[in-house]
Length: 79
Length: 213
View 1 (cartoon, rainbow over the protein chains, first blue to last red):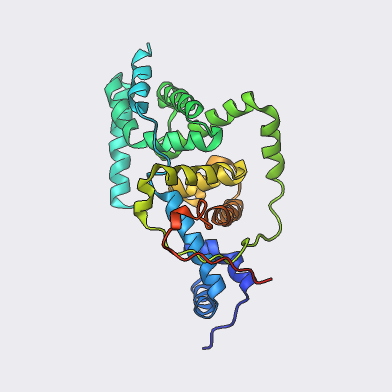
View 2: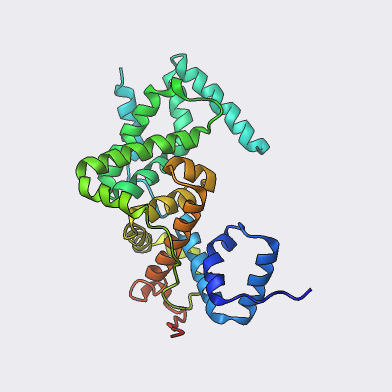
């Protein structure tokens, strides 16, 4: 069965759900066919994926030095 | 529930029992895996490290003193994030009541489409880059520049890796709303990070800015 074409606008709308695998297999197939043919949407997809990886990296939100120590000190002070 | 997750829950349930029986040491063990999660939640709301630390401490003290009210069917991590989130919002509300009102206003406007700013070509970022403090700072600044409603969803989903359902419970918004905000937050971040920080962090990588219109 031929994959039904999908517009750039529709691809942008779905790009986040695509990355989270929150779309139907049919939609995934249509989007993948679109990405193959559209360099612009592929660039948007790559960039969005980079964002997910950068933000999700444990090193971005590092606790300040001594955070744990001060926290446990507070707890010890509790009556 | 996976085996690992159910094991984790059993371990946590044991620790919680011990704490409620008066063993304070067990609370430290219970808390340790979630310290960074608590801190990241706090800073996503209050934005500065000193306030975030204060919020985290308050939240932990509250969790300790209310541990007996924790219900076993809930997830301990979600419960902790929820407490931290409430503490952080309360602090923000006290410090900036007007800002807080504007957060609530924004929540009503979730309709309409949201497009990527441009078609900037952005090659995969090498993970080693995050070893650099400036790069981590740049990512944090970009997150901080988002409006609170996007930032909170983004941090719970991407940093804490909570599910859509958990995020929706903690923030008290619908699941489609979580998805919409996450989508917008990601595209906005892409817009502010893709060009690189003065191009410096994508050195050696081609960066091409192109608009279709």
